[in-house]
Length: 121
Length: 111
Image (cartoon, each protein chain N blue to C red):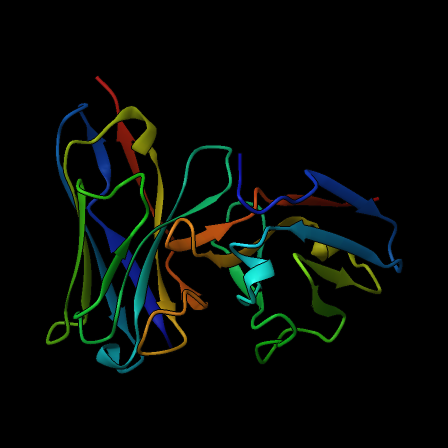
């Protein structure tokens, strides 16, 4: 059974940093690209970042480019999102999701339960 | 303002058929990029409903179908059931943004 479990969310001050983790199990982690998607309270979905199965290709939404870094540890089946220079509009539930392919297609067939990031003073 | 435009809400009675539109432009749907659809039940993570414009993942009932034409795509739900009440999102790739985009979402109410 595919499982994705996010962690690392919480309350952080504007300008601060946070690292999200997503522990994956139930599939061959390195064979699939992974995606981060966020959802602000009461709002719609926003694609944030993506990484290929090997980790060699990464992609970012303009809203986070230069501030967020996606990475993965295929030996430990874990996806990461390093978030720096956080702003109030980064407040959201962050979901990690599994792609259907090893290259990024952003067709996400499994999702985690999400972790809430709140940026506030 | 989302790059992909969806109606904020649609409604239908049990057993009826409803459609949800997703209107894009020449840099996304009109450029030939595939459209995917997700269902988000209240308080839960999104679930893949349709991928590659018309394909259903295993386990998704055939009451759900997708189509695409020109710069738009549609999700059709037939034989509406109470458990279909959810938010629905379309998704595609946008070449101008060099990234993937979601529609603003459509809330389906089953009357």
